[in-house]
Length: 69
Image 1 (tube, rainbow, N blue to C red):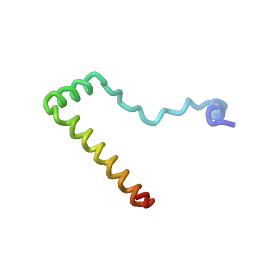
Image 2 (cartoon, one colour):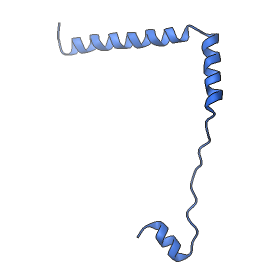
Image 3 (tube, one colour):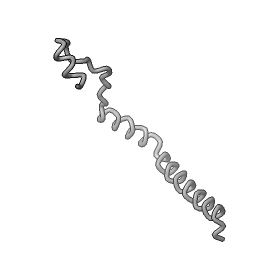
């Protein structure tokens, strides 16, 4: 028997939901991100450079690990 049925038979009210998460305001987040990117336009280039660097280092590590060269 489930908890909901047991509570109903005992005459108890339904269980309270424990936590209500706050709603995110997507528009304000978008505005903050855009204003930051307009203020510092180098940020996307840094992220792309870091991603490419990680990929290159990962490929070199795999090549050395499996002794492909």
